Length: 428
Image 1 (cartoon, rainbow, N blue to C red):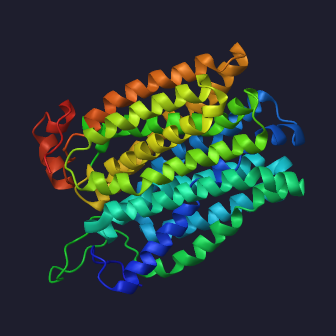
Image 2 (image 1 turned 120 degrees about the horizontal axis):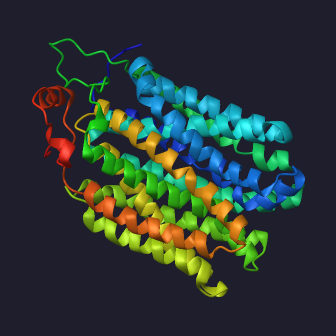
Image 3 (image 1 turned 60 degrees about the vertical axis):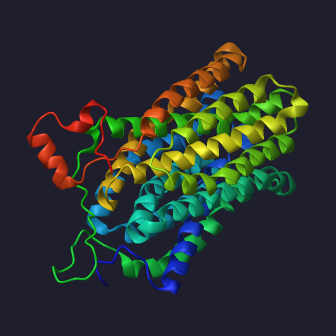
């Protein structure tokens, strides 16, 4: 099995296999999570969960994202992206099977295992896109984010009707192991392209690929700006994902309608997940995309709670479009602000690890604030304030700057202070 693969994908069948594999993986990045909130009330009744336990269940995936993401770049350097991503898909399948087979015992452990696998997929899919197809990386990211949105829509739509008709928590939870297993099978051809940090011989006709990524990205203000944007957009997304169905049910909608509204938010995500990374890839700076995305997020949140209930589909669609744009930008920043795939993996791991740990506060805090106040007003007002902060850091992260490559970083830090520490990246 070769340990080095040219950065550019040249053969048509290689492009097809890569796109299919990444699309299948992307389909599973949210289905395991978005399938839960529409049936939260049923899970609470069937499994005798307290409100605090339900809030912890909502936060569990994001906590796992934060903890496990920190190790993804190290795993990449040691074993290669393709091999690690296959293992992640297998573990995702196992976690979903366990959660479905024994929900009374394995609901939390199965969710944690599945979310940990998704954390690795979140980090390494974007860096692999930069390495395997750099000239079309924005399109490739858009494709797997589009499938991410499709998975979120399907799971939101199917969960409540499936549970209502079958009466089975096991089926409603375990069904999502099927697309995960299919994605693992479709990933097998990618093992032939795996890298483990080896460089080709000097006579090789292709450019070397760095898998080591020896840049300590946390030393650069630009990395912290990307991380803050990633963390805040994730906090807002998962807080809305976890509690919007409950908010709409509290306002008088049925469980099916609330699930459909969550699916509509996924439709909004779908509308921008493919377009925004492609648009971002065509411009050195992305501030013009950041501003409307965050304004739309704040407006959508406000309308979902305080607008007339009959207009909820409009506000949820605005929220979904805006959040899909923010997610596309966050993933794009982690790729575009890095000079090579190795640094991209390091930046992605750092941004997602710290960012998701920050984001894990969102679903938990919203649930606990609602329990304490008996109202959704204060939790939603807090989320709108955080959207304003995200707008500021997004404008900073959207500047046309780039982190240094490993060799440049060593020279920068030998001659203290390095340029990135004061908010200046290295111009591309």
